[in-house]
Figure (cartoon, rainbow, N blue to C red):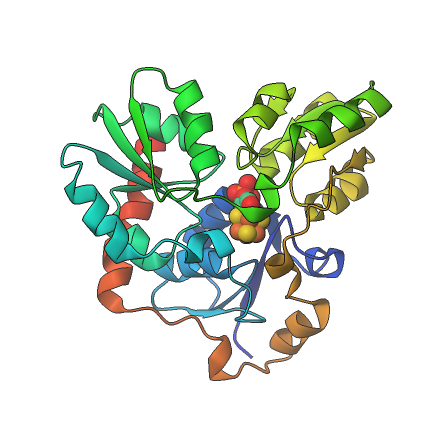
Length: 292
Ligand code: 13P
Ligand code: SF4
């Protein structure tokens, strides 16, 4: 049996989180993927995360327990549409959020995640930045990087799960639980981010709880992260609305166990075009270079 490492995103089902060698946000998982020495990497999350692992490990076997786990926001942007749009803005840098396909990353100049989007954009020499595909994260970046013009693309690009978290949901819970800190993900709408005590990636929300130790939080992101925070930190987590990403729940403990037993049909292997991988790798590595 090949030596195997299991990478798991913070939104995964509890039973999958418990099988993780490394549990984290998109940035931490990409960093882990760069250091892997095992022959086989099992990525429990959604397609773009597995693609990043493959881009960073073109000669290793990258396995997804269920290939139907796909990020709806990432799938909506096609590389050819970005290529055409960028022609209209020849002086702009193109920043691709990690939640994009490998083909879109190959078209972009640099990748970012929610944990470092503000840092990546603020370090670019260009004054104009095309930011794809999340308009809400683009607005969060624009609010925090004052000296650049941020051009969001495509129109209405957003995560359906985070975009559905409303200010009135948040206010309702905040008046019921006035002692709770309000922490949200930057994929939430701008008015929700403005009303929060803290805005950060999934692992940054976890770190806030670890460092500050609140008794209770109102958490504006996918509910899966709540399991980790409650289990590891003993913080009570209240989630507004119905913040469940169905794609993140496609992977089950049973499917991961099957892979760990060595049952890996070809359909579970991540395969990408070599040229796309090479160009996308430059975009991913540029993020690591810029952020040091
Ligand atoms: P993080 O990078 O914060 O873990 O977020 C990934 C994601 O898909 C958010 O919806
Ligand atoms: Fe994509 Fe939204 Fe699901 Fe994250 S929560 S994987 S952005 S659909």
